[in-house]
Length: 372
Image 1 (cartoon, one colour):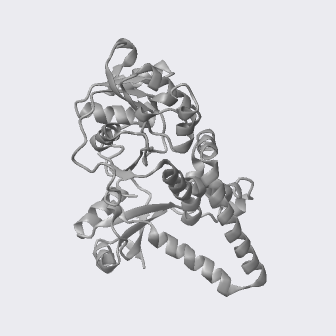
Image 2 (spheres, one colour):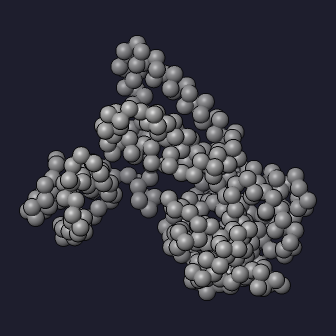
Image 3 (cartoon, one colour):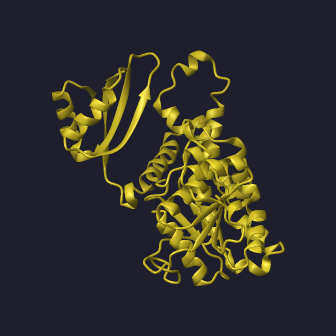
């Protein structure tokens, strides 16, 4: 649910500037939040169960060690801890900071809300407003953090019915200061959305990747970019994703049940040689890929891939990019197929379909080997 479609929630331009912000958890997300707010001139305090994370974060410019400012008047607490700890830490911070609004950046929103309502801070739940930035990195920890991690990325804010407008606006202020794009959702809507777009895809990616774990070497020699694309997210931290999926079990189970029904449909179609049924499943998959918004949330446009062979020498990739820029064609996406059996890489440049031929001609004039 976007800002525009939710008139009961605050709109852009009205959010107040946050006062002192306490970030609990100095990992990738927490430190990135702290860096963004500090860069914007806000007073930020950082704490973490591991003191070395705090030292690293503060040395990077993420703010001050909260232990050195014990009596700070905190206006907002941002909880950035592992999913299993969210409810307990949010509860603890609501009790420790009786005048502060508390938000979290966890991947699941209903479970921590239920835990707060069931605990000693239930009477303070109005000061809790959940949120979730859809940004991250394949790296973890404070050294992977950056003040620009959230720029242009969706960041869901998930107020519950008891959250007052002032508390919601304070969380909105932080999200906008970090450069993110606000998406308004209820906690239940959020959990259903991330189950569909993140949690179930991760599980399915893991299942596909698992078929490779014990595969014969000669089978793996045929692995190309397609299987790398499908299995990439399966390389995430199993402990973290196990917590995330367990915390969103209801929504994940609903969607897995739908997927199981579709898988049974595929098995029957393949077994019976029913090409019409198999085609219907594949057509729906194509429709799903086209439903994913393009860059900046704009409607998808017809795209086309231009394949270029790039020698495995220093500077060749930079030369390709420079020549692509010189062509005047905007590159919408890029993928690189690293083939261990060739002394070259195959670079896929994804461009507007109407500009692909121009890019091909321009690169060929500069002696690049292209594949149409």
